[in-house]
Each structure stands twice: as structure tokens, then as C-alpha cells.
Length: 295
Image (cartoon, rainbow, N blue to C red; front, side):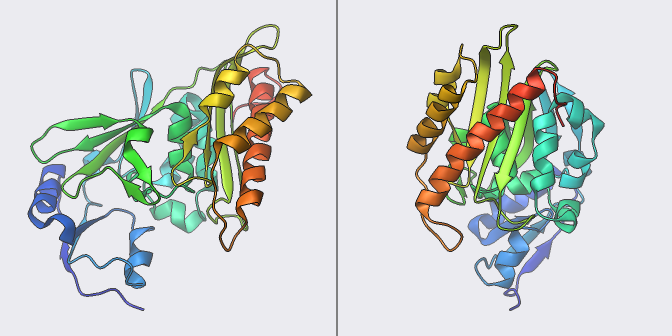
């Protein structure tokens, strides 16, 4: 199939793009990398009357340190994150997760802002952002900005709080200290497919092996990625023994609410979430001990 007829607009700056959005509202869609939008247009699942191509807005393409955050512009491509030494050093969890995003061709075109705005609960970047308690910067047409945390932004399956006249401007990933350990694990039917389940984890350990500052999120098993707060609280001050890991798996499975689909049953996804959480914790602890380098 081919997309429905649309008018093509190509702003050269953020304000111009926002003005178009204000004028055309729900009849318009933003095109950045096009890796999520174009397939839905080809299948007539989305039929915007106006397509606003923001790919020329160079001010939204950057990776930089900003206080306690690694700030990534909305038009930054996945490949740029994958190849960035700054990302590897400041947020190795993001560097590891980005390799799971689609195939090389998709990473060459897809953008960070597009992935976040699309709101797919199986996508890797929303899971990482949720685990780290990151922030999404939203631009308004009047020049003001809003800063939202993941649980405010991701509402349900493929639905965010982003309004028709707003744009994602920047995504902020908290910097991970060098002494911390992190891990991203995922299971998909084929490499490059969206995950059946995925887990992002970051933590610290003290000299005796007790866990500190544990943050974990799981994606692909709920309508949005979720932080496993009950698991995090349980783990604080504990060592990663076999009994603790069994309890972690049980708590994780109690925390998620997957649905069955063509790719797997709800029960399979629930068990997979528990297994991947245990796996991510083991890897993160080993990296925090210095036995394996953060990626």
C-alpha cells in the first residue's frame, strides 16, 4: 500500500515547526527519521493531512553533558549514540541498549525523539529512560518548555501525554557514576525485532557486596515501561544470593501484567520478565565489582 495524499512542510527551525503544529493540530504529524511513522502511513494506519519534516533543524541534533544529565537532542540518530564515546563513558546503559534498536539501517535513520514520542512499550529507549528516572523536555509554541518524567509522559500503549501542538525537544539520561554497574538484556524472536521483554538495571554495591541505589525497569510486558519499585526496595542492603534472586523473580512476575499475543502468551512473558530481571542484576553486580566492564 501507499500513503494517503498529504501536504509536505519542511521547517528550518524549532519555532517554525511548532507554528505549523499549532496551525494544523491533529491533522499534522512530525517526521524525523521516519522509522516508526512511515510504515504506519504506508499501511494507512496513520493518514496525516500535513507532514512536517524536521530533519533540517540542526539545533536538535546533539549529545552533551548538562549537569547531572547526558542531554540528547530529539533529532540525534541512534547511530550517533551507538558511536559516541561520551555516551559510553557517561551512560553505558544507553550505549548498551542502543545496539538492540532495530537493524543497522534503522539505527542510521531513527532518532531519539522519534522513539520516545512513538511511545511503544517494547522500545529500548523508553525502558532505559524509565530505569534511570530520566526526563523528557517538551517544547511549546510560546517558547516555554515542560520537563516530564517517564511515568508522566508514557500513558498507555502507543499513547503519550504529548499534545498535537508540542514537540519533544530533548531527552535527558542521568549520568551513571563510574563505580556503578549497569546492564540491559532483551529477548526478541529475531535480532532487531521489538523485544518480547527487556530489562534495564543500574546499581551500586558496597565493599561487602550489599546492593545500593538499585534502579530497574522492564519493558514489553505492560502498556508502558515500568520501574520495578517493589523489587528495588527489596534489594536495598541485600547481597545477591540465590534466595534473593528467587524472590526477585517472584516479585517481578507479580509486578507485571502482560497480555498474550502472536509472539507469546501472557504467562511466558511474565516468566521471561522475572528471568531477565535476574540476569540483568547478575551482570550489573559483576560490572560494579569490576569483573566485567560496563559497555
